[in-house]
Image 1 (tube, rainbow, N blue to C red):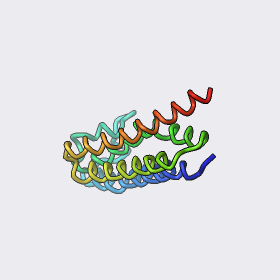
Image 2: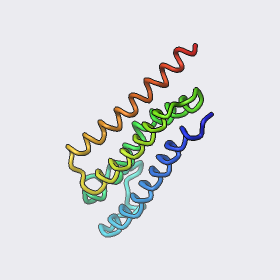
Image 3: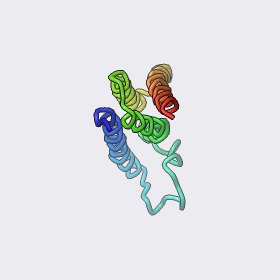
Image 4: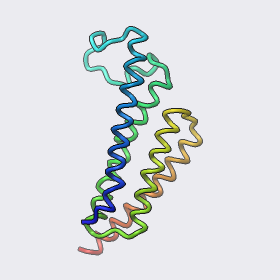
Length: 144
């Protein structure tokens, strides 16, 4: 197994946790400002229930964290597959590009959140992931 292929995945895990902390440090003060507490929340409430209650800019961090729990779930096993079968230098580069673009996407969505740029960043990261996934599929299917 090649650790150099797993490093981008580890970096994205750390970034996801940073985003989680960013939510905590922005959402809780915003809730306190409105007099909202865990005790006043409806049973079974979720973060998305705060859309329209908390300022949009506060909720953007949560929206991005949700995104980091979606498409990267395809990235992680793809990286593991490539680490097992033997990544190329291009694979490692594309994995780091994916992570870098996702971090820029996170910052953009959390701070500015203009859709044309978000779509462009999402598309670029998806292209990196698609190439990685196709390479992983090719290597594993042809190995059988």
